[in-house]
Amino acid sequence: MPPSLRLALPFLVWAAGPARAAPEPPPLLAIAVTCAQATQRVREGGAVVFLTGLFRQERAVRDRSFCARTEIAELFLMTTRDESECPVGYRCREPAIDDWD
Figure (cartoon, helix red, strand yellow):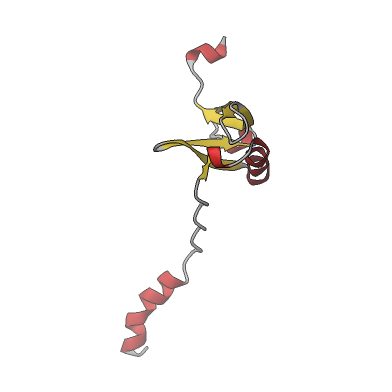
């Protein structure tokens, strides 16, 4: 094997390695979308991150299958452009001791 190919081989193996994951779409500003638009995005995407305040993000999911195994899904109400309490989907969270009563 020529020396130049021997030096380039590690780079070629790295470049041909596993495909890189596509970057996640940026969060949506909650007050910029209507309730119907937010609900549709969650229904279609399965999980959507919304900006709900200054430096605050909330992840809304379509159903519990988008939560971790130990999490539960609870109804997620969010302020949108046209509604103060829009039921966009669910929020995943770890259950508290009171949840098991």
